[in-house]
Image (cartoon, rainbow, N blue to C red):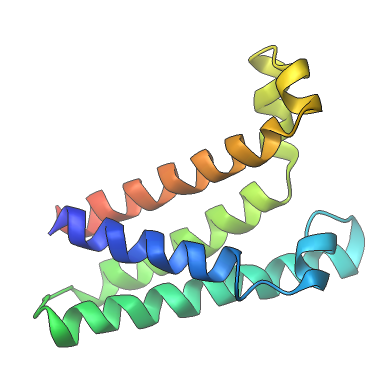
Length: 130
């Protein structure tokens, strides 16, 4: 079940991060102040909604029996971690700590960002499959 959950959460992530993310969200989700937090929060909410929908599909189509509270905890985890990662401070701090200024200067932050999101989804899938 782990692989199936992870796959659907990853598909949800891709849908929410690319075709369902508005230009406004993409441009402003890391900005300071209310505008940044609003763009970030609405973007994270889309992630939660899409992942909830796909977990429901898993329940209906694949016959998963996901316990309610752990599933809600996973959805909170997905929203919270996605919002925190997209604020970009953790990614920038990681790249400074890992001594990756050249990688950062040439678009590496986007790769570190996506890797962090996949790690968070993997932890979510492990939690649900346990």
